[in-house]
Length: 328
Image (cartoon, rainbow, N blue to C red; front, side, top):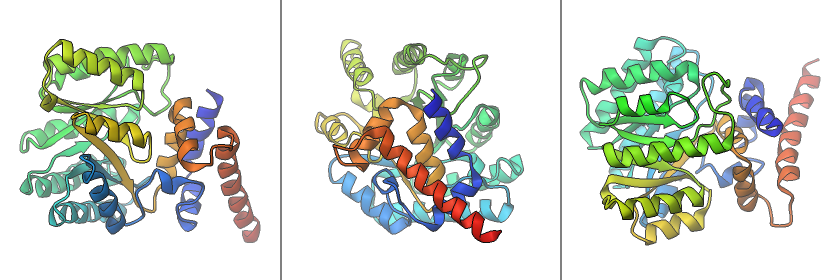
């Protein structure tokens, strides 16, 4: 838990975030981020497509509090949509409302997201509105409600660690929903803290939506839950076109390929861009299992996970302190 708190704190450090941009995809982030530009992202997507894997694409971004930054993010995502279409790639869009101005003004954010959803709709492309921390939960649902009045190519995420997750799921059962365990640090009064409780609720949500929902994206690297789902859909005669498995780019590559070869719909979450730091730190903070998975991809097999990750944070901290000293 302490290590998770450390990495969550690092993910929210704006100065470290800006410093990381200057030094590119260092400390192993290149293994879990699909490049810094659209061309590199498209190449990664096409490589995955060649193995029967579809993709959802995230233009990385943190700490957007200026209208021009939100507008720039919007324009970049519109370019991604055009690139997906022109390259005939099997991919859709995932976006974060805060990157598009949710912390500035709701109407501003709604207009930015509407423009993206409209462009995607022209190409029959789905847009997933990612969920962030609890304070952004209801405004994100509001975005979905407002956009759904005009479009049907939009869905969102339900986080299993929230006590009210089932209430959210029942309300939005007619939407394409991505189910996740949850990546942010939330207080006990609104979210489960114990892994067993989160896992149990996650399975409950998956089963309910598979039986009652429109389409279920099951986003997990946990092979035990994946095996449970495989048995559940078989016993309940749930067709493959009602669900997909999802994993993050760079994690459990062999299992991703295996599930796709077995005939399951599989989608890889493909993040790209210079603003990779916050995303990378949250992936390290999420679960001890993710630290192990990152270590297998980022460091050699003889490198201890914690030492490797800590070394990356230490190096970035030294760079930051060095820059601070130069300013004095």
